[in-house]
Length: 560
Image (cartoon, rainbow, N blue to C red; front, side, top):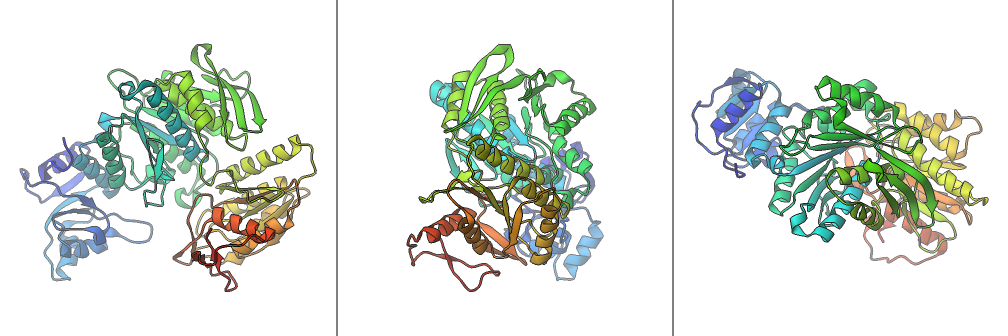
């Protein structure tokens, strides 16, 4: 079914087939074309379908009159029709055709997939989830497939696109999606898949978050291959319990769909105790036996499908000798910092192999991957110490990032210190603040605690919770609290001596910071570069645009 050719009747029948329909007032044989599907009343045009979704802060049913006034021809919601009609009547409007569904989130995904003609069914689709490492793994796999495509040509079937935290990845190019979320809403996910198919892609890679899975943004996508990085403490503010978070991650396996020529498969991290238990349990629960699962590991004796042997930190990055099925081996070297990236390299290699990529393409793709913006990204303006920006914003990723940098210092047998600047987000999981503080106190020599998206919470209170974590470990690092993030980065680099390492954690690639309900332009990558230039007395273009955070002292932060 080509995009935009479905009818109202097609939608009604599809919702009935998915057991997501309560009451219908639309005619049972209505050939009117289905309009584009919207959940934001401000985006509705004449003839569109409006789906009223209930969110954390508001209820889409309250905006049905706005959608109708904008020209919505069909409304879907979970409220009784009489309630919705009365709300419209209060605004002097008549409710058009209405379908009462059981679950608006699911209905949004179902209607979106139907409108675009189920593009995933004409692609080999890969889903990658986990707490940490998703974006880097998507990037590595995209690079592997690009290498395979170069060597095999258009007939090889390796042309791929991806949707990730960074945006759209296609043909080795990254373009900003503008969504500022890892997994866009269902309409935009389906639109991205349709765009890939239209551009000749054979393979689609989706970075899947727990929020996206729990909110059904990836429903109606047939996954042929799934990959798990790890599952650690994160997003308990949304999911409530760790068990619910794990369940959301593993719900990606509900999307597994066999192809006529190949059984769907999942590859997970045998070194991660949660994945090692949860993934097989979920496979058993959905009636898929262990033959559908592959594993990867760096631990000798685990007998994983893919083994990482002889891992090394080399001047050019990370190296590991990978041994896969049939004892085939490959030398994988990537220009990535941090030994935790070896797991990401192994998962990308395993997924690439499952997609049919030769080992030569796996080696070339991983070797040619330039690194993920904001993930252990070096910042160098000529200073005598090393500086990095990293996205570490969970207890697990903080532990991994700082322990990896500590091992670099230890391996060099020098007197270098590790200086870490970071904060924790407001209105998010409070329990991780102390855990992240403890990780920093354990591995760093000096910690600078600062702002990171405090939103409507009191920034000083957030910092105090982090301080308690830093102080809780035996022989903790020294620490300072500098509320303004620009000043905190300047303070961190001012502390540094030759051979030290400075790392700014938490913001990574992100381009804004939220205070109260306002997003202020912000980039750690630019701010750290500016702090280093100021330290060295390097002039900054006075005509550059500015960043100003509410915590600043009226000082402007030029971009570079």
